[in-house]
Length: 433
Image 1: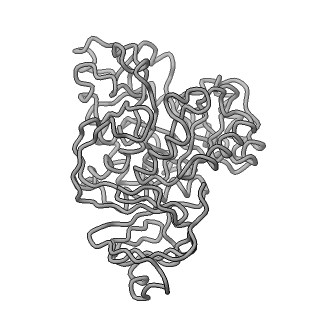
Image 2: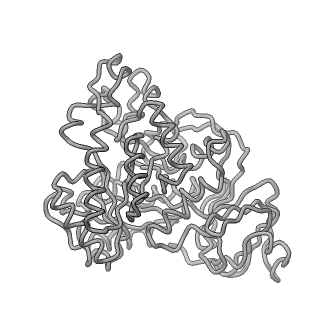
Image 3: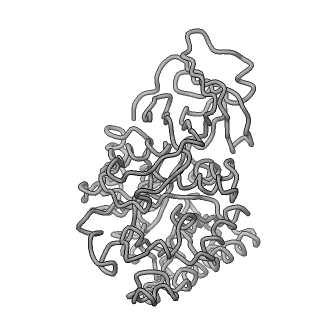
């Protein structure tokens, strides 16, 4: 991580959106020595500090840097797909200033040495903040728990088995008990292995037309409902990492109504795309969970609006030609998404589905609060991590120009309105369009 720049900078005449303070107003943002001195209409009335660099941001919007809670990176073990450095560059291009790296590496991030490796490599090579998530179980095998307290002390900010679902309820219960004792968050992606076995896309009429076995919605909600009952039993801070169905949203909503300390996330893909996007066997749309029916996508949007869903993630998952340029049923799940997270989300804003403050809350303020990290705010004294946006700029995505080492995007040649103009981390400009 670069050291914060010395001196002052003022971004004036911008729309300032800061969900952490309930602010959406025209004003200025003042940065002094890598920290935010003031942001909002009040800052515009105070003038610029002596010697400050001043930028006129008329027509532009400033938001807290995005916090992406679900990013898969190849390093260590599959650096040809993605390194911490390349993922960080992709994040910066997408307005993401903090990301949580999943433990699905080779070797798995399940001991202190690997947590320290991630933190050290990030300090040396990354231009954004990179936080390691540690595995719940050793080797992501779902049987033997990791040393949660020790990993937390080493710097892990979250406990998850990444792409894997823990089938053993006793193991999951014990993991929840331990994370509760340490005040940590446990995040889980739920998919019943038996119900989803052999399935390659959402179960339904479209899968039948394409000749594929489907994955039923129940494969997601059944283990989720089990987890919610275990969360009620243990009192753990449980986060449903990535839901995709109306049934799952209903289950989360019911748990919240009971006062359980439960949160939920959704990938931008499941807010923006549906099963029809698979088209004629396009493998870049083969995801886990699979893209669902349009009714489920609309249910995800509604759950975001009403607060049932707390967090939006990119679920950035780099895959190369050897794993994607295959017949649909044989190709790997996953798509890159750090650079399209915000742009795809802005579609919901332009369509009137959600407001910009609600979108930024789910992409920045809420995940920062959930993780307990210093991010997601433009409040006085906060680290100067923010993104400068042109909400009306039209552009077309060219996959070959992505910063990621892998190009398996679900949005190649997609038309977007709204893009990142500049990304700043600790007062340093790390991306400039």
